[in-house]
Image 1: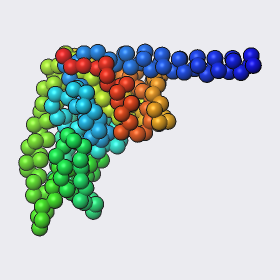
Image 2: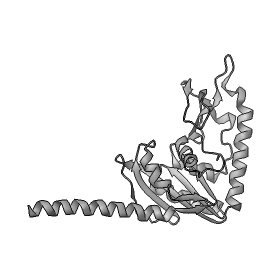
Image 3: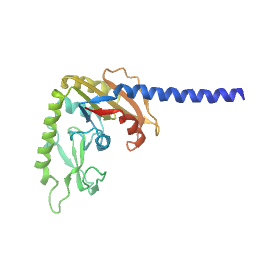
Image 4: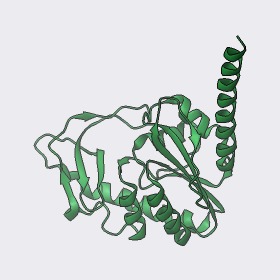
Length: 237
């Protein structure tokens, strides 16, 4: 009986420690920011920022799929040069994707990939009967360029920025931090979500990178509990 009691106590203490670790680490990233900006890796980062009232405007990476943080680092280091340039874009054979999330107007679209930066658009190029996928390219590119210009204005003018990125390892995140240090004029933090845990798992990782708060989460980016815990104490000024 006594052994059973201590086993239960041990399990309880482990749970408490994990919960405390969560609170302490999220607390480092929580607060009030001028801007909260998604760095991918898919649309759901921006969607959840909007859900929690943290998205003032569309960023240049909000509505793309960008699985590799190393490619985003390359993109930022290159100042978005040639990003989604027509010469680098390739329409994939898959089509007729209906994107519906309650935020973006659902539309059947071509899936188009930027092969230079490994970034893919799923809903910027609507399927128009008897027309090539790039028939709407000019409108798309003008909109993207406006978002990129606004991104750099915020980098210079905002007093505090929180970047949120789903996916990336320690080495990639360190590189991201160094790149942003050269781009952002004032204060910034990075909330880096490392999706290698079990469902509902959330705890800190000890990466020791300034301005970076790495959190191990499950690979399910639709998990509402995860996003609630991560974003509930973050606010815009």
